[in-house]
Image 1 (cartoon, rainbow, N blue to C red):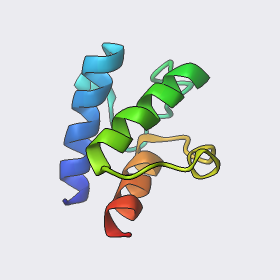
Image 2: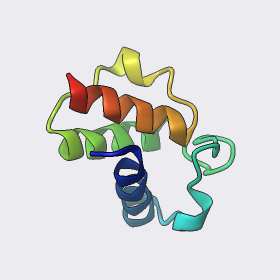
Image 3: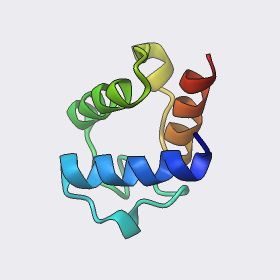
Length: 81
């Protein structure tokens, strides 16, 4: 799966789960400051990403995720493991 595919799926997840308009989901967008996610939303996002990748996301690894680009990189790493 390419980074563009991951971004596209992430836009769908964020729209369907949190009602965030896809055009707001750019690689530079900050999850908490710009997209208004909170810590509980981050847990929900991690669960959705687990469904996408079929792999468990370790909480310690997800703590460092701040931007959409960080999420794309984390998903890419999971898919390549």
